[in-house]
Image 1: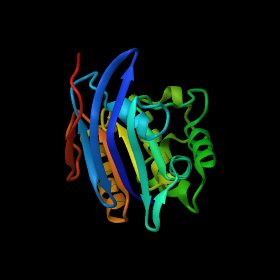
Image 2 (image 1 turned 60 degrees about the vertical axis):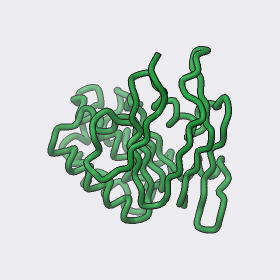
Image 3 (image 1 turned 135 degrees about the horizontal axis):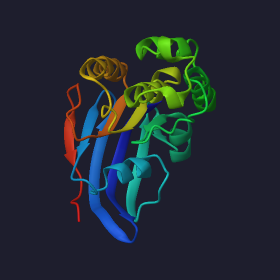
Image 4 (image 1 turned 45 degrees about the horizontal axis):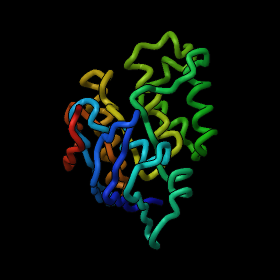
Length: 206
């Protein structure tokens, strides 16, 4: 279980342009950080660097556990969720097939699928193909991975964007529950999160 994330002097570039440099952040169990900045500042790239999907120009990303340092490979393969700005859903599968696939891929938990369906109110959607779902319904299906395969660190890229007010509030309750159980949340946002969160500003847009 990840109990801490430490980012030191991180620098990232995209397309030959440096997005940000000398970025520092410490995130501990039970904390949420709202990552803010202008469009193009590098919020998404930072999340992807933490997840190991892109190599930073400089700096260090370290993961901590209750017994000390956690190897980055172990933390990334079994300790975190990255939910990108795009939902990454296969449109020809039914909602149930898609949720079941991701649960099996990321490591199912006992009762995880049932909890996910209930938490994100997916029961009426399970037999529908993903391509027939609205943007908000697709987002709920993508977010349901968080409950189907619980992991300590949530990396969220604009998680609330297509959700209505009621669903935002409901997801806020799930985020608070995750934090109360020792989880960590790092979220790139434009809108405020529905939970208390420390702000961290990144970069400047070109």
